Length: 327
Ligand code: PBG
Ligand code: ZN
Image: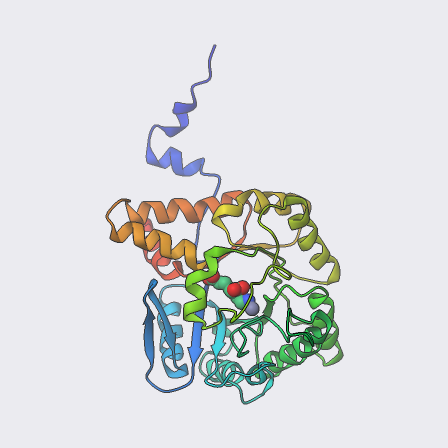
């Protein structure tokens, strides 16, 4: 006797009833890129629908997000002036600090502000920390010191969650320590705990103006060939005090998502990165896929693999689609 799987697929009500994975607008964090100026909203050519914005436009964007049922943003700052140590990121008057304050003033606790903590958008050399004396690579421990400084800048400005993305060893411990020492023991850290050195970040480096001017990030970001190390990276950040773990990129790494899901009880986030977004957009523009269906299938795949949270440039489109579907 064979099993009739089709019995619970016969009509939509039954199919919905046995659905194992649910996607909701609440699962998403939407990335925003803020730059200096007024009235600026500049689209990125490789990422249609993604913009660099001045802070006044960011505020308008937050309004729109709320109207779509999205209430979490991941904030990136792009300063006008970059230098060797990323000074703008270390100043209470820098682009990110001012923008956090503006958003908080207008939206209070209605919008959860997650701040990306890194240096590549702020340094003139485009690396994720300060360079060592030979200027060959990033100095891990010197970068930890300015990482603590940047974390305090974010916290003092009113960030709701700090997300360090630079992949220096010891980052989580360093940030947790400085936050606790300064009365921010309740401020959570979402670690980019397993972040691969990936060509999928290409379009992001255009929007964040953060491409390294020499070399690559292979001494701090991980090799995409390594699965055991990928799990160890996340478990180490859990040990150091991370509240949420992350795998990045998403699409090519769903085995890693599942593995970390099984190895840790912490909430797990995936970053559906710029190159993944650009690929779907390009396929849609070429007319070779049913974009909306492929989009929902992809996002559901992230959750099925074990992700609780999805950072995605598609978040607004998904929110609209889910609303339409529910009607
Ligand atoms: C900065 C950072 C990067 C991304 C998020 N934070 C790029 C990088 O490491 O080069 C990638 C995001 C994306 O591709 O959408 N450390
Ligand atoms: Zn970086």
